[in-house]
Amino acid sequence: MDQSAADELYEAFAVLAGSDPDHCSYPEGYVKRQAVFACHTCVQEGMEPAGVCLACVNSCHDGHRISELYTKRSFRCDCGNEKFPGFSCRLHANKDGRNVKNSYNHNYSGRYCSCDRPYPDTDDQVNDEMVQCVVCEDWFHEKHLQAPPLCCDSLTEMVCVGCMKRVPFLWTYAAHFSVSAVNSAVSSRETTAASVCCQQEAAAASADAGVCAASPLCSGSGVCVFTKLKDTETHTDQHGSVFWPYDWRSKLCTCTDCKRMYVASGVQFLLDESDTVLAYEDRAKTEALRSGGGVLSCLNTLTHQQQLDTLYRLNEMKQELCEFLQQCSEQSQLTPEGLQEFLEGLRDRKRRRLD
Image (spheres, rainbow, N blue to C red):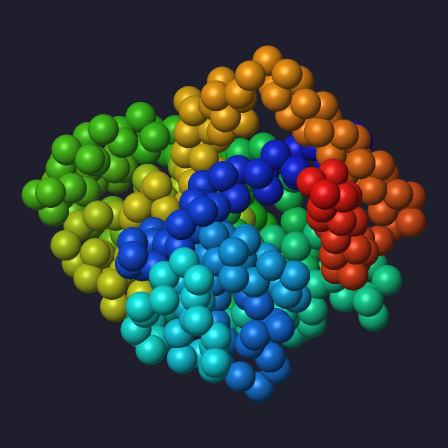
């Protein structure tokens, strides 16, 4: 397996590791961020969209046709509610009829991007990368971003063109802080951006008082950063999706008026730097390392012979997974049917060993 494939698997592990695989997340309410899945066996085309947590995928929807939606913010598990007629959640049966604060998009129906196509798309011969918008959380093909994709380790978030138009004040920040084509004068503003980063602590200290000290443009006057940026803004082309650097959220104004503006636009989560997928993945990786990755903790409870047997089976499964991925790479395709067949093969071999 090449390094990029290993990195992708590790990221996938981080997403799943950040969610509880054994207990339904419903009692936790609207979870800040968790791995969410759509079951197309239970919720078919034409029905109201619904999502389920990782534990319910494992316990209630095993063997069903599942789509992994990566992570979603502020989501409560729907498994077994009225959107699943005649179906009850095995892990937490007592649920409200519906979760009124959940937000859904066409991802829950197995479609993505502005082209409203499935992924993977059997009719599309181009294996195009997809990028998730941090605002609407839809996934977009690079060719449909209406902006040239950028390759940079510091890039962690993208806002699609539809969300930029829906939240137009972001164009002002994009003109100063983004790394997309919309910010054609990035190099001339590097000093300003660096100064902003150096004053983040001052911004945090003054945020409660409604004073924006996150930028030298404020000069301690208490004037809104957004207003100052807008006053110094030159004409920019407001089109296409926008890519943002790692620390862009820390540069958003936190004065009282701006906070009201974020709430009115439904993007108040942008002020929460722990809302990012990167922060979620980092927490999952840290927890996995702290607890020995779960596997090491379990091994400590086994006898020496059981430990050897377990490690042998894990290595065997790893080898089978590597061979499967290598075969998919050579054939340039990984289909849901092929993945399902591989997983069923693992289950059959496990049953034979138990028998």
